[in-house]
Amino acid sequence: MKKCEFSEKREQIVAEAIRPVATELRLVDAADFIALLRFESHASLADLVESAAELYFLPGTVNFGLGGNYNLDWDSNPEIVLDLELKPRGITVYARLTLGNDTAGVEISHISFQHPSADPDENTAFLAKSLEEAKFVKSYALPLAS
Image (cartoon, rainbow, N blue to C red):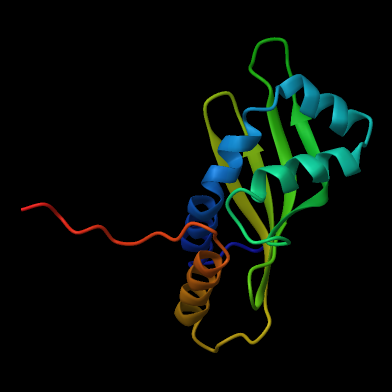
């Protein structure tokens, strides 16, 4: 995706939404991910992603995108990259989830809005709203103690 002024905000929204999924996926041993990626066991990878996502999102919202990679050198920790498709209501997001030793990151490749607005800020707000609606556990603002 060609980066624009809205890319960073949208990546933050997606990253925050799938944080619990990334946390679940980081429980899988890196060697298992590497073996599955190396031998192109896409069905097994899809099952792992689906299992992690089903705890937090409605079925079909977070899917494995049939691709991935790994970085493994002698002098560094392994890094796993998984292609994901997020399909909340009205939007399809194609992204890469990078899982590291202590971190995870998201890079959006493409976003397709079913009915895009002419205002990019409205599209960004719709992305946040749609991902929030697709969650099992809703986030609510907590009142401050006085």
